[in-house]
Length: 128
Image (cartoon, rainbow, N blue to C red; front, side, top):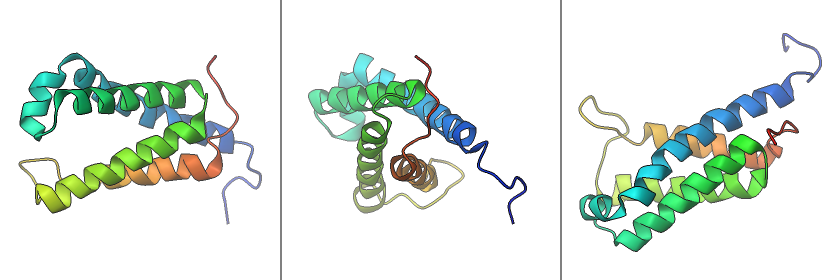
């Protein structure tokens, strides 16, 4: 049984989830836009692909924070996280978790968060 009998605070919870996920993607997207060439060499992608990924992450993160096109932004970021999971597990053979590097546990949480935002609509709170 829930602590609060009504869903009075559901929009606050979704807003906080959108805010946290949005900040993560804005912070991770910005370096891909500004330093695509260096990141491309370490990831084995073209600089244009890294820059495009950065734009998707940055703009979608801002959309989540502001509450505009929330479901579209969450869907795009969920797709990004599926691709990240694929690269980390199948191409780079990273474990789920490791002490000396980032595994794919963080990617799984971000995928689940974006799917929750997409499926719920993200709530009604906006910042504009």
